[in-house]
Image 1 (cartoon, helix red, strand yellow):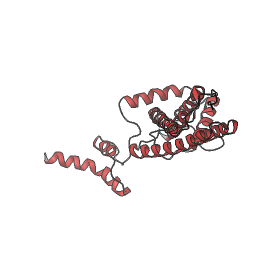
Image 2: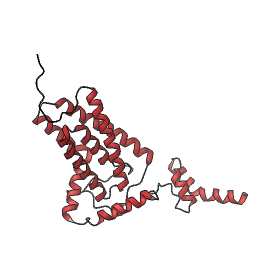
Image 3: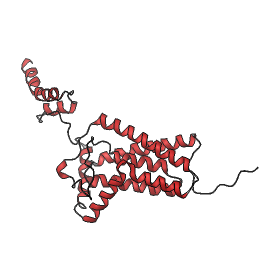
Length: 239
């Protein structure tokens, strides 16, 4: 028993020393990695094991068929950049406000509520999960006129996807807008997988969280008396 305890303690030591030297607490996954004979450097594994890892690998393999095709790569970069910081949704909201005064207040509130809620939830989830991005060597080039911003935050969830789905659901007036906005959000999500900025499960998680936030925003907007219209003109109230 004494020998087993001594052996286990010795195997934990490298990971503990790495965490202490960095001034940070040892992540549980790093401890498990050291006990399993890993590098013990305090890093969080890039992907979980089991069904999630298999799902990520299968989806990445499917996208890999299209990587290296100039038109597809360019489209993915453009979509990703449009989704960065919600630029595309600001443009859509501005267009809605300029083309129709009806519902302008709701559009502005929906955009603001989506931005604040998606940012907060995304930051909290990333800090909680702390997942590594896909291996940097596998990504398409970043920077330059046709590149994407190099990500610095953790991988789960996809912030682009979360914000896109949240805003798409909250901002839409009627089923036609909802379908088109969700389609755009899905395209932004696909671009993040294509560019290998995220694992597929990061994108799925972002879409689920974003759609839930967007649905909640719609409820709040309806309670505030700014519910979404359905595109049909209402008859004037009797006087």
